[in-house]
Image 1 (cartoon, one colour):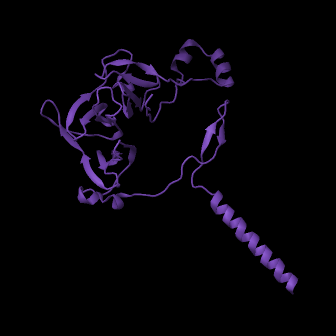
Image 2 (cartoon, rainbow, N blue to C red):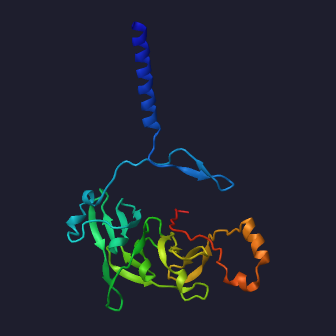
Image 3 (cartoon, helix red, strand yellow):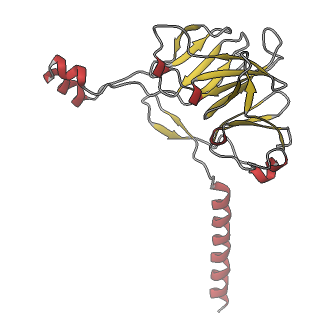
Length: 256
């Protein structure tokens, strides 16, 4: 009987140990990198969630009682003070939180340079420049107003400054310019990840002039596609579905 009891206690201890190890080993997210061949490889956990803040925790109702919830938040960025900017695209607005993650302000409409009231349409991206590293020591809020196909710029007091529409260039089609994410470097150059652009990241000057594309992804054909194209006529090749690069869905830049 004593022997059975000892076995039971050892087995129970092992079960508890394995259970403890499982808890520590479990992570709610998978972290992976890519091999030189482009295959996914599991890697050590890069980040761990420390907390969850919903609209109630943000006290969003205090500044937006008529619409106190987030809807389809698509982008988030923080500034040098720890304040957080959320592209609340489902509600056509930008929500600003203080460093304690409490609702501070909302940008949902503005008066443009022609005196007309403007609103956002599916704003999917937001970016805030850091005055400490900007070459001109200024700071702005850039909003990718996707549904209206434009970039809208505000100062840090949430005052409207200007709008950048599709650049006047034969290289960019109307369908190419649907900004859904944006980043700005210390020289004021604007980098745009466009929803429908397979040509790479759109690069604009500080003034909004088109300067080129960067980072276009390589497109490859399968063996079957290569063989099939050898048997197609010129007309069939022209009417065939184009094999285009996958557009980027977000972008950021660092100090370099």
